[in-house]
Image 1 (cartoon, helix red, strand yellow):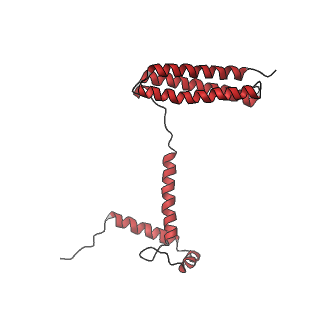
Image 2 (tube, rainbow, N blue to C red):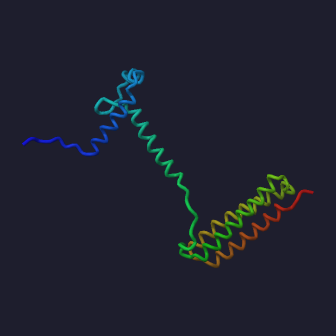
Image 3 (cartoon, rainbow, N blue to C red):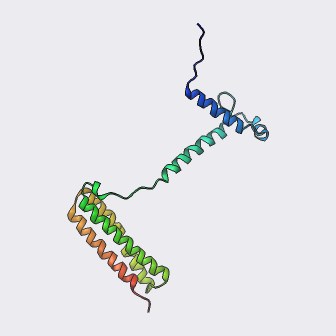
Length: 169
């Protein structure tokens, strides 16, 4: 009985990849520049530095492609405490609105003074910090703390909006 040669799919892929890389390195200038170097793979073929650059490039490209996938909004209905998540989510929108009002005023040059601008920014940053604390409280189901923090957030955002609307004299 004659024995057949068994080649699996992985071997075929390796051979195709090797042939592709060999063709890419077939340029005479590339060959000449690598003859003097002794760092090669086990079979004495592809220069390892180029091979590793190719492998690392593919890996980094894959990571960058995966990182570009946008995350969607949190669905309050799937949250363990949906009523808390909804209240915090609405407060986040309020903070975002206050930032927009402030930015329009700052870019338009209508904020009354640099001191008022600093106060507005302080209120907005404090509101952002409180949002994070409110999210943590919502995740734990601490409704009282969520309500208290959301009240403070609303206070900071209203101060920021009022200050942003105050015109220069």
